[in-house]
Amino acid sequence: MKYPNFLRTHMAGYIGMSIAVVVIYIFIFIKIMQFEQQLEHINFHDAFYWVVSTITTVGYGDIVFGSVIGKLFSIVVQVSGISMFFGILITLVVTPWFEKTMKLPLPARVPKNMSDHIIICGYNQLVETLIEEFQEQKLDFVILSDDEEVLRSINKKHIPCLYGIASEESSLENANIHSARFLIANMSDRENANITLTARKLSDVRVIAVAEDASNVKYLKYAGADRVISPKLVLGRFIAKKAVDPILGMVSGATEFFDGFRIVELPIQSKSSLVGMTLFQASIEDRTGAKVIALRKSGNLTFDVDQSDRIKHNTVILAAGTVEQLAKLENLAG
Image (cartoon, rainbow, N blue to C red; front, side, top):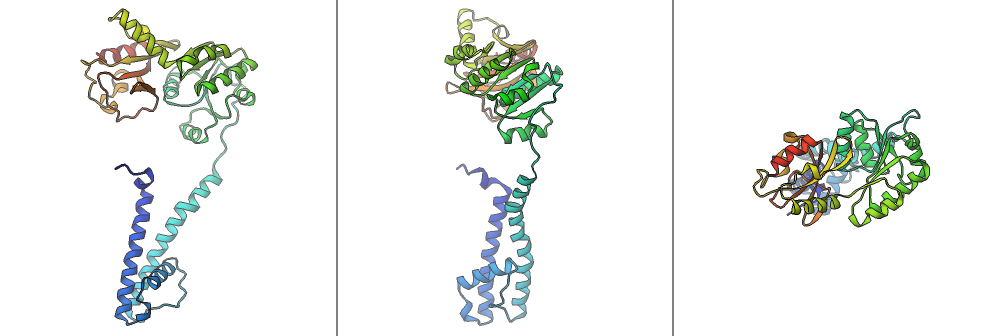
């Protein structure tokens, strides 16, 4: 059975332990009341009321123990209650409120003198690969997105980012679109079309759009994209070429994003040593330098790649890297 993520957190265990402690305290309360012959308080309602009021250090004093063991028990409940009650209160209420209040604002624009840079609209695993390549080539770039959670995450890694709606003129102007080298629209097809139209209205910057659906390639070109990359279309062309020429090299069918950096879909052959391995076990990036950015699962291409995904003889991998890196991956693929 798969449990929700919440139940697998440390906080869930802490709350569960606290509930168990309360139940034990209720049981002990009843036993001590029986020992002291306070028969009117030997019930669940009084026990629960006393335990909660003592744990929270309220202690109204209407129910008290007379024996030494009862008073010692009261002290134990009070002391443990401080850490239990206030620990939960601080963790669930105070800390989240404090973090939300104290969050630093995200960058709203790039430096005015930033130029010859690359604007990347949207963020996913494909962008992660691009970032690594841009950093190696020491190219200036900025991630433009309105996903605050994602931006805060990459901002912690000191990756240049900008908060804004990529299809709005003000956001693109804040990204210095007039002096940019080119723009990559990497969101949904509809959003990419709007981004391209807005970019064309503001500047003659080169626009590269990533199409989720191959049937939308022409519409993105109509919107003004200089180049449209479609993973599904790349796959179709690759398979067609392989059908005509079975010995066609994988790298020759790759789609180039910019000089030296290519993206390709690669079917895994049955004789490949990768068959039966998980992506984690295969260590493709460590062995070849190429990065897996998507998989074809059940006929659908997904960028939601998990390291536990198992490679089969009919698995199709979308990989990115240099010609040399993809050539090494070709050998691994059989």
